[in-house]
Image 1 (cartoon, rainbow, N blue to C red):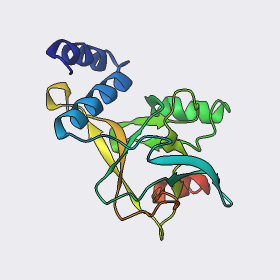
Image 2: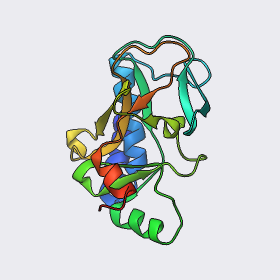
Image 3: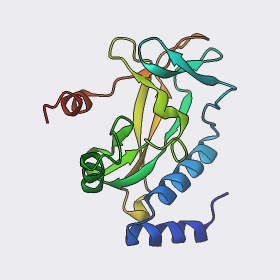
Length: 178
């Protein structure tokens, strides 16, 4: 269980500007524990395998029900400015990035070693069966958005792919409109 000392440490880290991953992880773990839920587990609930025309995708191993928690989108959390600079320098493709709203921060899931398997969830508007939600730090830490999670929004049969709508901003950037 997360202790008051851990929250205090997370608070200091957030204030100093280098602890968004720590705060996101602590907030996520505590929220799951208090709610009595567990995220889906790779190779037990879902698997990553080739997706027709899309590279890799995430597929249900068993039937997934609405409101099940898929997991936290993980990667390196950086300022939007740092992310833009890395894209311009060719240090990241931007293909696995998830913006944290208007917070000025981005999660870059480019590096598989520091990212979660959720980076392989593909886009579909028509077949979207997942929904993205915000992970906010506790109000005592400023209540800022520190992460993103995915949840199941409609039933997913075993063997079917998990999709979510990346949103218009992703496609504006991807197609060079922004």
